[in-house]
Length: 118
Image 1 (cartoon, rainbow, N blue to C red):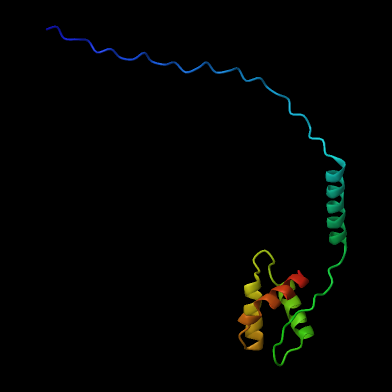
Image 2 (image 1 turned 90 degrees about the vertical axis):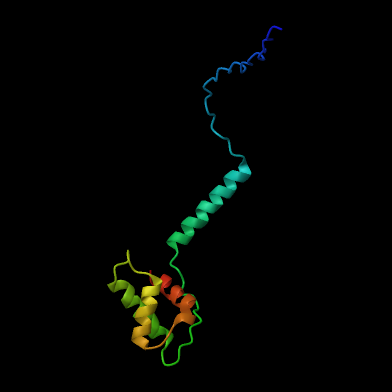
């Protein structure tokens, strides 16, 4: 008997790639509703930037200290510190040392005070 040759299937060649043409990007045209919304948003942002932020009512009830005194202390801490490295936690810790009390439960109120000053 003669050995039979195994036939291998023909290799498939991938289809030729299409040439990609360089397309010019056309500018997107905004419809009037989008233009109005963008203009209104920009105007609101500009108005908010020029308007001085009002003092928010802060719910901070610490026995033995008035809110105005606390605001002044926070202001002095922020003004005398390096703002690049100052954190709200650092301010809170300084206030805790000043008042000799734990202010952990007043984190949000202290954050509000610090943001008012900054």
